[in-house]
Length: 334
Image (cartoon, rainbow, N blue to C red):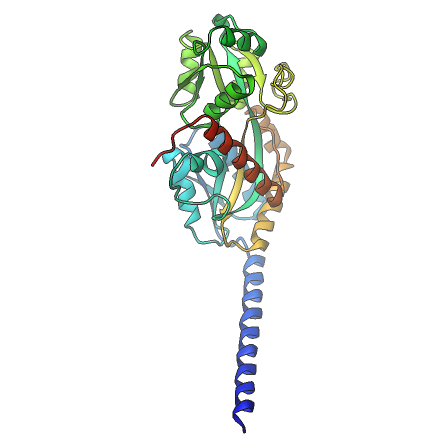
């Protein structure tokens, strides 16, 4: 046999081996996905237990457990502005058994506010589905003398830098929404960061701060009780949960939108078949009447999506809030 024939035979063997390995890996992946899930799934929660977001994910986990026929547990890993839990999931095995409770903070704002974030939200995760989308809301105390967004803007322009608006923390979506308000309305207000919305609300009710930018679920009851005045809601249309509160657009700021949301992500490399299975389970679970009712009572509308829609949401939100952070000259953490 000539050297040329030997060479051709050798390379033919190598190609055959590669084909065998390629198709073996595909069949193994399909078999793995078909058997999924075969054990407990963990959703890593970046907040402490007991909050509205934590409760919302626990409701979803309960319904999905029944749908998938396996237990789904919530593991709380708070810390570093939601970064700690996301970092943990980014390093987890991409097998569909460790998922991330994805929120605006760990998928968009917190990484943008760091010089060297420990993960890339777009490259290190695979989107699964949105869970719930909620607008921020600007509320005023009864003692503030401010009864509308137009009233606030007029008073802020008359006294630049004097009117205070509280957020539930530096660098949080509520803080960034205040910065967006300053730019859009061309006003100068004093941002007061609190450690959580509960502390801000105590001072709002005590008359120590006149306004709070907060998430809508925190104010379903306070609005119903008449404890606060809802000035504007930061989404394109009025909320079914708080229909009496106008949107920022209706109140005079076209295009103003600031949302918080809940979603599910998996580590990058998770098989597409598994992502599809989980996505379909989220959608089926979202149609459950008891789950919808529980979420509605918390002020959290159920908004499942495709992975592609969630991916687009994250990319668009990243572009938007990156510009706000840059324009506001917010210093990034080392």
